[in-house]
Image 1: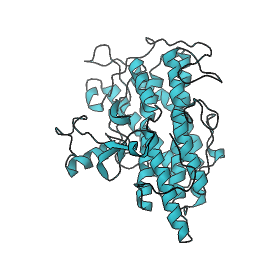
Image 2: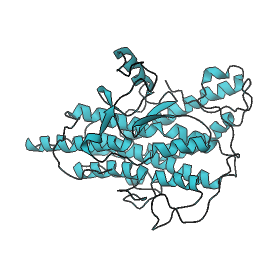
Image 3: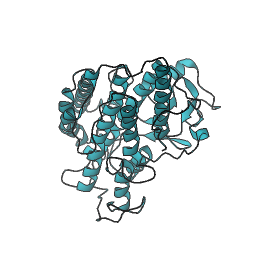
Image 4: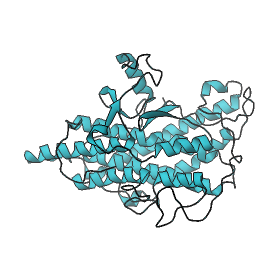
Length: 382
């Protein structure tokens, strides 16, 4: 992804108002969070004491997704917006659709498997767009089964999809278009920041009017995989969003980001290729130590399970409902951290890994009426 680093022409910028910028950044928060439930479900489906390589890779990526969430929240706060991780529809109704080049793909809640790994690689796939014309592609609603002719659905259907977050990566306000990739989505936000800040400076103003006390600074978040950036103006905003994009797909075709961390795509690719990357390797050609994956040492979680399917297992149903309440509380804690109580983020990161015990109450239980399948978290937060 070619990331803008300073003032540039608007280039048919989609973001023309500060309210639109707030909307895009709020969608960015939703995109970053949408990966967490699938990653955590795969992580905790692994048998204890087995698959240590897979465990480490997925765990590191999950923590770094929390970093991405925090960086986007810092940018939103810096430009006077208000992060809201508790609004209805923030958590997708899985399976959800995400963009990957010319196609959409489904993101499921399912156990660690070759299919899950393939989805993770698609989520983090480097952006293919190289020209201005490639930024957006027409939205094919027929391919998603929403309409029969590919035309936009009625407004009420669009509102329903928006509320359920079933389809992510749409151009806000323009249902006929979608972004080619998540990387292009962030490029558009950076383009909007440049455009709006240029306009503001002509009037002797700035778009960075947010309360500095709402910034999450490094002492409130430590992941071992990149630093939180305090956003105070254009340069730090672009640095924060650039890190989000780089950490997923790598820097300018390389396998590391600007903080010298292996990008998520290549972390996952190690599991596919059975070998670790090391310094000096080219993309697709890891040459480090071998790693092993036991595809059978996994609890067979039923994909995209819903609470309503658990009526034959009342204790499991109760555990699923309790987990959903726990997760809602977890998001509330993060939301408070992003809205002026940054110290709460330290607890939230710790809570993310405490939820393993609550997931185990589900994942280790076979389901009545579903031979060979186990329960799992449903992440139904309404």
